[in-house]
Image (cartoon, rainbow, N blue to C red; front, side, top):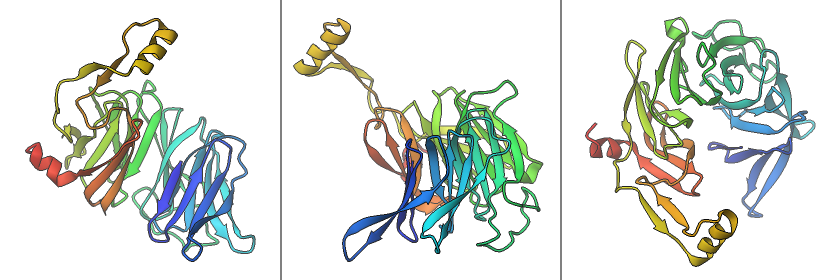
Length: 314
């Protein structure tokens, strides 16, 4: 996992070797220097993200732990406090509330949970939110099931710009939104798409999700809280085609599988493989102008949201 802090221009990375590092750029030397994050974790670090004010880092792991990290100047490294109660499986995704205190956590036990990540040594007492008033560290503020019958593991979570709504996507091709202002009510939509892998809010009432269909999908939340599918963000370019590729690839295909033709399917979308990550390139969650997507095909694509809407006549 990787997360960039745009204000301080720092990068935090994590990997399956149980470690995480914060990278700071040295302009004079022209190099990136790293500082270790002392996680005290014996499993792979699966996801990581800076808090909005860039003073804390949240990291999820295969050890059923969420690490909340802050910098210790005396020791010159990042130290972690553990949130480990009431998490029963691998943490797959997380997102920070705008108040820098609450963190949403998705996992493979089909649950989405909101925890307090308040560290009293480095920050003032947080104000009351619709998610709750008392926020000692690691307090479980809310818990949601992806469905009554399980619903598959949770791939991504995203707080809205005001922090009052929480969207998540599950492996059952569903999108869900919980609204703290509506008594923690859950509004779920089962889509006809293949499983989605990433989601993010692009306005107070709209969010984008993408995954194995290789194209971003636009959703809207109406005033009653209901989630509605609006459209994909690009039109079909052309019919899908199968092409025979190079002689070298043909030989490999024949050697491995016994097939005499090496066939490559070209999709009618910009991305040719599953989209694994969506980020805001220009704007913020209250009004996003341009978003970026990265996929298994190695491409990074920028999408002008308003231009896409005009093209699709939305």
